[in-house]
Length: 316
Ligand SMILES: [Zn+2]
Image (cartoon, rainbow, N blue to C red; front, side, top):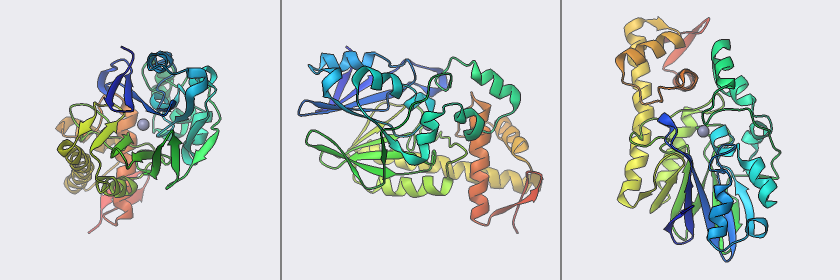
């Protein structure tokens, strides 16, 4: 079985389990003999199992794929776009704020994450889902907030969320009440409070997006690294995601109160000691970057200020 149908017309093709990331879920939206692929995954995972799944549905990968739609440009979601385009001829769609990343994957390490040289070096050879040693590709269509992406009679509305990364979008089918949330809601199985953002992301945008998405009235939530959530469980996911963000903000404010002043590295160290952080543990760069972007959000809110040299302190 290459894919499984969750509700009529929506199929999931799951990548391999990869440690703390869980797996990457690619979705196929099928209507009237057409198929739209959401998030083709890494350069090789799910890889050609996507075409297999399409063939198993009685469709032709070369003729029936109308688009490759990316929630955002991170390597675990969009690295497979170039390969799938060559296999299907279908256009790649992504928001313009993540299109450059799609074209130049090395930007993920060089610009999107805060890391030192040693970490950057080791990540270059990483075999994990965040590796960037694949060929970039140009987007065919830049999607914008509010537009519809059609497949057969179905229309997916683009909701630019911009919290997880500047160009992150979610997609909503109002007819089946299905929301594809990418990495904006619930990144990781078993703990939906866990989250991360890259350097272009924003905690303010993330909280605003969670509010907007939670009010759509979705019956089905299809996240990128987790199993689908149905009905009453959908609401809980938004609450958990919001709790995760607020918990990190509170933790940082508490630590800054206790220490008086601290830099990002110190705060990350303290949070690891306390083991209370709802963000991933396996990649230091993700934790550091998420912490930094969260500090920037607290600064915007007037709760903390930077003393210079990356040292932060509470206001008042
Ligand atoms: Zn991501």
